[in-house]
Structures are given as C-alpha cells and as structure tokens.
Image (cartoon, rainbow, N blue to C red; front, side, top):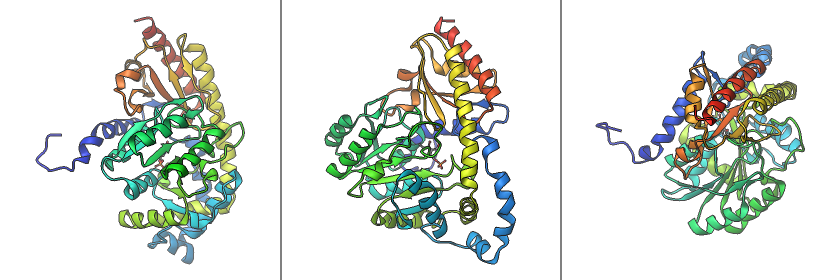
Length: 405
Ligand SMILES: Cc1ncc(COP(=O)(O)O)c(C=O)c1O
C-alpha cells in the first residue's frame, strides 16, 4: 500500500482478505450479475411484508418508538433477549436466560469483541480447513495468527485440535459447526461433546459461530457445543442475517454472565449499543409469531433451491467432481477434478453474468492456487430457474476445462 500515511501494521496482514471480501460484496450488489457467490437470503423471504404491518404503529408509539430511537440498553433490548431464549435457544435444547445473551451489531461483531477480549498480537486462533474467509479478516485485524486444523466429512478433527492447542498454546478454537460456511458440513454430536471437553481441559475459548443452525430442511436438530459446556469456555455467536434480514445488522452472543459482561464492556467502547430501530422491529417480529411463519416459508424455498442445485450439478458437472449434501444452511461445497481451475471457471462464467466463489482463498494456511479446484455455491439467493440455468452453464464450462479446452 503506497501511501504517505503511517497505517497500523495490522492493515498489512488483513489487506489481502479485505480485498477479497470487497470483491464479493461488489458482486452481490451488481444488479446484472446472477450470483451463487454471496450468502444472502432470497428476496421473497426478507420480512418486508410482515414488518410493514406493524412498523408505523410501533415506531410512532410513545414507549416503543422511544426505545427504538433513543440510546438503548447496552446488552440489547430486554424483550429481544427474552425472545432469543424463547424462540431460538429453548426449542433447540439450549438452557439460557437473558443474562446469557448480548445483542450485537451483526453476527460478525461477536468475533470482533471476542478478539478484543482475548487476543494479544501473535496469539493463535485455530480454525477449520477451509474456514469462513470473512472472519479471518477480523482475526487478522486483531493480529492473531490463524492456524487451520484437519477436517473430514464430520467436521473438525478433535485430536488435531488438541495437538495444535498444545503446539501453539492456542487461545481460541473457532468453528462453524452447523451447515458450515463454506462447506455446508455439520460437526457430529460426538465431536461437539469432545470440543466442549477440550475447551474445559485446556481452558481455551471454543467460539461456536452458528448463524445457520435454525435454517434446517431435514434431519435431527444437533445439540450446540454450548449445551455440553460445563465450565463456561464456549461462546456462541449467532446472527439474524440469515433468519430475519442482513440489513437489520443484528446478531447475538450467548455465554456465561461473566463473559457477557466483558463483551458488553467492549461493545460499549466500540459502538455503545445495538441499533435500536432494528431491535424493536425484530422483537415485534418474534412477539407477533411471524418468525416461525416466515421460517417455514424460508426453509421450504431453500430446500427447493438446494435440491435443484444438487440435481443440476450431478447432471452437468464433470466426472469425478465431489459435492457436499447439506441438511440446511446456504452452501454446497464442490471439489472439481484438479484439472479444473475455478478461478478460470469463474472468469468464463462471469462473461455470461453468472458467478460463484472459488475456494482457494478459504484455506488459511495455503496459497489459493493449491486448492483452486474447489468452490462454494450458494443456493438461497437465486430462484430455481436461475439456479438450473446457471449451474448447467457452469457445469458445461467446467467439463471443457476438465478436457483441457
Ligand atoms: C459463519 C458466519 N459467521 C458470521 C457471519 C456474519 O453474519 P452477519 O452478516 O450477521 O455479520 C456469516 C455471514 O455470512 C457467516 O457465514
């Protein structure tokens, strides 16, 4: 970065990742691009139709409107924290009260707050491999060293986590255990239990980033790692972006009251409170029963998208390709034969105004070229017809590349 300014050294370490994320967000907002790249909800299940029924009424109400527009509670609105416990945590087996919940400004903020709380420059954070690319920005901004652990179809491998905790004196283990980003895979129950035990045994923080846990189309609900924690070492990070609206910029952290107080203090020093207008609109969405109603629509729609994408991939992708079969969430992860460069595939697909994410950059400790045959495909944003058209086209280009054309 040639500049006269004396930028902080952290800007050097996060520069590359930031560049990648910028490109991704630009693609998501390009109206001409039909993207399987981002992690956006479908337009038809964004909550406009519900919110318009009550927004004017609640925002002009003397009490509720005041809560929305005035500086508000630093932990987040009390009734929203109660709604989180009632509508999201209890139904999936998590015993927690509002004292365990901090509302944050977007799901990613929990990772930022946790870094502020625990990370000194050079401290090690262990992750999956591949891992959620965006979060490594946050970790690098805290000047953490990110080391990835071995993974298989059941998720991160606890024995490797344990080995690396000892080797690097790691402070945090970061995982996206349910319908993970980018792979769509879920961590098995046994390994969830094991990670909670590892957190206790080595006194490390298990950072359970679980924004997709409620977006399930089939299969049994998996217990959170948090529910196996007996020593307060697990912090859950969740988001309302995937189940309400990314534009609300709301998420929540779940932890022991001691850690919630500490996270709250850091949030006060960061941006004081969550956005009040969003909080009120979201709390009312829960109180009026719209959350469950919209989730039903959302999961039915996304299942159709997932099924259409998997079927079309199976029909048109080159021989020898592999993909995940997620029971929920937003993504399918694909491994093409080594001869297919997804950087090239993406470039050619974009000439037809379709895009997706090449996977190489999602491996924290490898050069992107090493995993250039991998890719992440989102199936929640585009309608089924576009999914079929785009995946067929991408498949045909991939076959050409596989044949060396
Ligand atoms: C694993 C994971 N964590 C956190 C987030 C961030 O959520 P938010 O958009 O609410 O900041 C995302 C968003 O895609 C995600 O996939």
